[in-house]
Image (tube, rainbow, N blue to C red):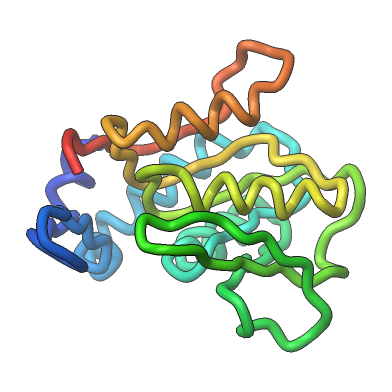
Length: 183
């Protein structure tokens, strides 16, 4: 089943810069069967786990995250880039290949002890997802798992996130539907 999903993801060479193979999920999202498969896989995996919220990372994490939250019967919370949220926010700065960036979440969106499923479209180096985990933890909420459609395992992001989330147990905390070798 995951091979059919992988086949619906378009690869764009040298975007946004030379040497990068951009994995574009817009072709997957427009395909009704592909979109349904992704949601069904995630719903099946997480339907029996107790979460308070799905938190989606801007912007493609919003699409699947919102649908999945609805299917799981829980709320959805966005993590946005700096300056996009209208109320009081908490911020987390993180490193990029070419500088730094900042992500934000509304200060009142989570409370201590909330159990979170963090969702994005792709895990590469893990920088944005790790920053999101730290941001969520600043308010005392707990990232129970991190999920994505795509993992680029050679870049090491899923391992970094898993190691960060594992803390004191050996349970795997990162899930992705498909993997692409290389960048």
